Length: 416
Image (cartoon, rainbow, N blue to C red; front, side):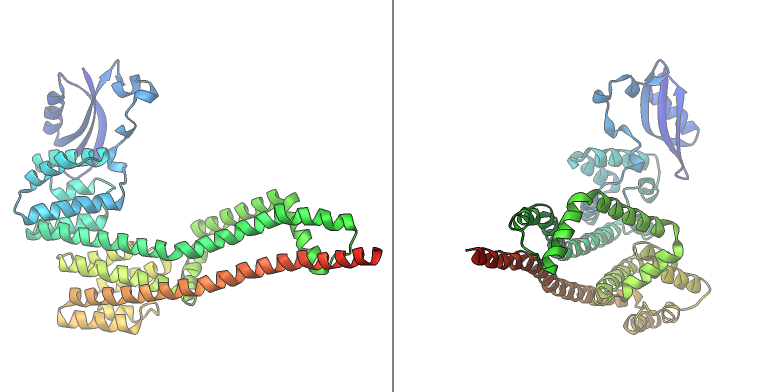
């Protein structure tokens, strides 16, 4: 009988192929002789995977390669937290995996844990097994590898859970802070569209019926309304074109993307929010990784990769290159304006005192506080600004409607 299989070798490389065997156990034995561990085995009928013989509505859509599936960070956080608790309680790794499998309700995470448990049984290191799945961030893999090296997997999972928790908390704070300003922007756009396409046209017909001469402001508003009614499709094309063009520039023009990333960090208040959040994230991950025994270079690389601003990421890449040739981190950082003197000084203190992770923990807390303050200032500034804009739009429209009404009253009075 033919079987399809997905297997992994000792170096973590995956193989997908077919084999003829008597049973699934026979497939596992054959793969084991080849130095591979079976991950998934599927029975084939008439030379075709049995999954493909089923109608599409009966197929298991989750049957794609689970190694390429990316689960939410919250799910990974829960798994790391549970593993940390069990490791601290003295439960063996194999027993902890069995407990997770018994209690896990998410089907995809259960598939992942099943494969990891099987690989652990076959002698594959935990970090190597987790590293073959995209759902586990590289930071988590590095912490687990460090935990395996120093025999402190409990601390490794605790640190991983702490990093993921801080990342989720930071993302949640940013989203919450921007929710109200974005709501006001959306409300303003909706109001402009509704007034231009529904409110103003009805008044325009009344003004034309009376034959009154409209003021300049009313003519301008009515012209804008007519344009929105007749050429809304053109506006839509222009907006889509701008968005596509902007995204293309960011993707294919490296100099423009670098300039924009640097420019965003220099915008008053907005730049402070972004920069403080990035540095807080960088310091937090550096502190956790170095405290767990991960090398400085590896910690710098992983901390750099979690920053989305490419200008700051490029500065950190230059720092990493300097550190490789023996330059102290603080000396290299001092060459770039994006790293302020406080950060550089604390990095220097940490390097010279041998308490680098402690310094980074303190700086992470400091910059997180500054990020929260900057975010509050941003929302406090945007709220009245958007209120003024909304009031201005309503005021212009109201004046453009009221002024012709006074003209209509004078026409009626003269005729009477």
